[in-house]
Image 1 (cartoon, rainbow, N blue to C red):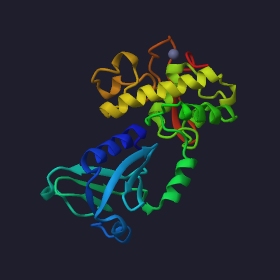
Image 2 (cartoon, protein in one colour; image 1 turned 120 degrees about the vertical axis):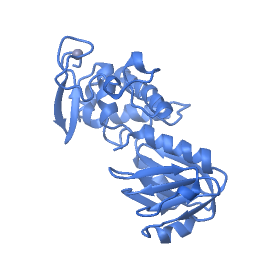
Image 3 (tube, rainbow, N blue to C red; image 1 turned 90 degrees about the vertical axis):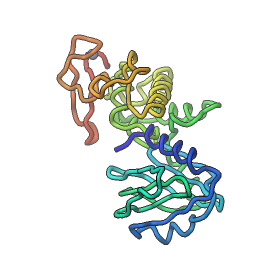
Length: 263
Ligand SMILES: [Zn+2]
């Protein structure tokens, strides 16, 4: 499942190619045909990502909301002739560009009120700008008021949007915090650090497309096996202490961490 940085990249791509322009929308596969008609031929006012969800806002007040889920995929094509048909749920295009959406969990057209409801439910997203620190404050409040382990809170999209399994493991390792600590046992300083580090790491993810988290490699192109401290490194020596990286299941997802460094 893509983490938030890749949805942010999709939003950026949409803004680059379609923002301020008339966009044609249809559904080669047919399942999105009647909803596509509601936004076909309208101007895209802007694309926005919150966590794992993408919002395409059109000039008639309607929004197309997309959640890729596990199997969904976007494909951007610059040469329209090369477009394929088949199982394309939604196709967005103009004379120059085309974007095909396949296999999403959600692809629907909703009005402003429904967008607001979803936005209010979703936790703050570290890839979005936060000039007044309100997003950070919301995150601090949501963590502090919960007795759930921080390892579960970071995956809860109502606490923070866009963090998945890789960033969860890596952010906690970098902060040297045990995933089992209850949210309310963390200090405000620690929670703030988790937020600021998410902002920093996801910025790298949005810029490069890779979830690199090892400090000395953030600015380099690194092969997959060397990008992270603990993710998928179970049984190997920790890069910081003498211990071994551990794996366990937490809320049905694999959790990687170092019991030697994180307590
Ligand atoms: Zn360690």
